[in-house]
Length: 460
Ligand code: ZN
Image (cartoon, rainbow, N blue to C red):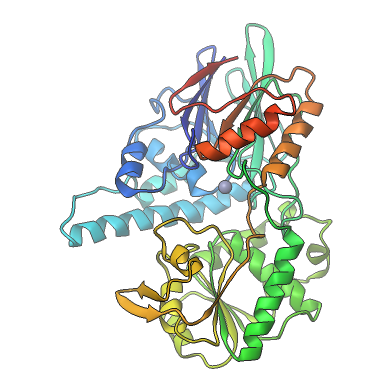
C-alpha cells in the first residue's frame, strides 16, 4: 500500500493524500491551495492525480482548504462518489458555491484592471455536479468506498460535521488501517462534540498546524468576550467583529446567547451581517445530531442561534442602514481577516470612533487588513479611503478551532494506546517550523514521525 502526499505537505492548505493499493486509489480530501495568488494558482491547476484513476474521495470536513478543489476534479472528469458526513455535505453546498462566486469575481476584477486573463477553476455548474456526487455517511458507520477499501468517520471536534477517518485497506489477504486526523479541534469548543480519535491504526496521517504552541482555554475566551462587550457598551460604542461566516460566527452568537441567558453581558442588539453566515446558521440548525449534548447551553437554550436581540442581515440595503446605527451594538461580519466583505464598510465607518472596539477572534495572516489592525497601525486604508484607527483593538485567541500542541499530542497518545500494531506517523497540514517542533515533541514520547514533501510517496 502506498500513500502519496499531494497537498498540505509542509504547508497548511491544499489538503489531499492519495492512498493506493491493489489497483484502487482513494483520495483523502481535495482542498484548495490558498496564499499568494500566482503561487496558489499554479498549485491548484496541477491535479493531484488523473481524475479517472481516482475511485472515490473521502472528505474530512467542509473547509475550503480541504474541499475547495473538488469541483475542479469534477470539472476535469471525476465522476466517483465523495463520502462525507451529512453536515459536511450541507456546508459544502454553500461554501463551494461561495468559492465559485469569489473566483468569478476575482477573474472579473483582474480583467477590469487589465491584468492577466484568468479563467476560474470552476463554476456553479461544477459545484452542483460535485454535490450530486456526495454520499453522506454518519459517524461510526463503516462503508465500502472502493474495491478493498472501507472508511469510517469519527468526530474531529473542529467544525460542524468535521471528521477523522479510519481507512481500512485490504491487500494480499491482510487488512491495515490508515488513520487520517483531518483537522483536529479542541476539547470544550462551543456547540460541537470533542474529538474522538479512531482506534486500531497501523499508520497515522496527522495535522500539525499548531504543533509549536498552546492556546488560551475556551472558557477564558468566553469571559474575555463578555468583558469586551460590557466595556464597549458602557462607552456607548459598537463592537465590530470580523469573523469567518461558517463556524466562528455561530460560536460567537451561541456564546453571546449563553452569556445573555446568564445575565453576564449588556442587552444590546446583535447583527450578523453576512448572507453566507445566515445560510451557514441554517445548516447548523439542520444538524442538532452533531451538537454536544453534554454542554449546558446546548441542553438549556431553546434556540441556539436566535433570540430577541439577534438579527440576521441578508440584503444589502439593510446592511447599509447599519452604518447610521446609533448606540451600542455588536456587528459580526465576514471576512474573517477583513480582506473583503461587509466588515469593510463597518470598519470604514467605525474604526475612527474611540468609543468603538474592533474585536479580533481569529488568526490574521500577513498582508491583510486584519493584521494591520492587530498591529494597531494608526492609519488604515479601507476601500480606497484613509481611516485613522481610533477604536480600541481587542484580541481574543481562545476561539481557535484547531487543537494546540498539547491537544494534538493527547490525540496521538489516545490513538496509539488503542492500536496494538501502531506504526509510522506522517505529519501534514503545518508550516515547516511547527512540524519540526511537533516532531521533536512527539519524538520525546517515543513516536517516530516524518513530514513528507509535496508529491512524496510512502509505503506501508
Ligand atoms: Zn479546517
